Length: 126
Image (spheres, one colour):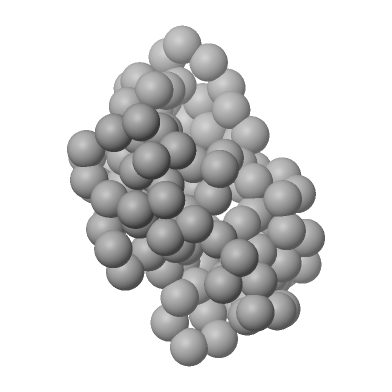
């Protein structure tokens, strides 16, 4: 499994890549493996501020549907439009082309409270 050191992680298996006052958010390699083949992503929070740990969408796999939780309070700027036609990008490249949303951070200090790669790796027992 892959645990990029430049990312921050949540106990709910989302990752965050901060770029200034904006960030990209997706699900981890561990999460996509647990879910199996992803067939649909439902995110309808564009333009909304979503609080830390609140649901910002859901991901549907062949086996199950799982909520997506916002790692930090943020306003959703855009959804990765490529996922509409190719939700399998999350399975193939969860940290790259498989990102889910781009957000503007409301409180950048919240990022410091997230897990680093080593702590997340320990959490999932990898």
